[in-house]
Length: 144
Image 1: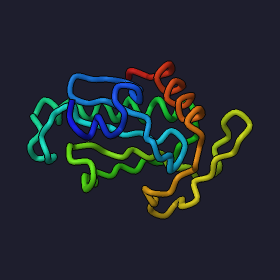
Image 2 (image 1 turned 45 degrees about the horizontal axis):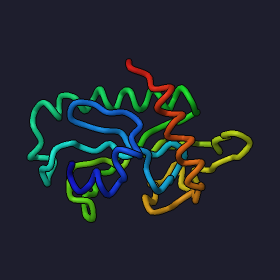
Image 3 (image 1 turned 90 degrees about the vertical axis):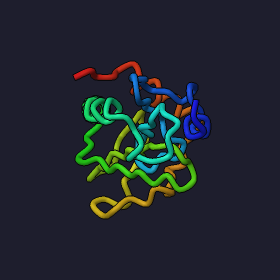
Image 4 (image 1 turned 120 degrees about the vertical axis):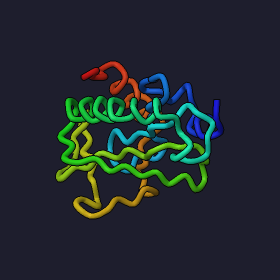
């Protein structure tokens, strides 16, 4: 297991696992259902990933987007590969919403839409809520 996976609490935070990638619920929920798409590899740059890892990535992203769209009204998705603190290749996957997202009686706004997201902005959802969202994504995962 690489340091980035450890930092994002894998395997407890796992939504879905693939051969070369894992989808994890993001500890900071900038918008509802924000995730991390992290490489299983211990390389330290995107350019060092295998061709097999790159070949699998479009399927991972397509399934993530399809799953989120089946649960919410996400209009767009932002992906950031920052790797400044967490060294291994990973993307912050952040759904974008033009209107607040109603989930179980609470409306969660995308305060930055349609401008760029602040990846450190946190909706400050409780750990219990974040775990519920992880399970929600996992049990309704769409393999398209």
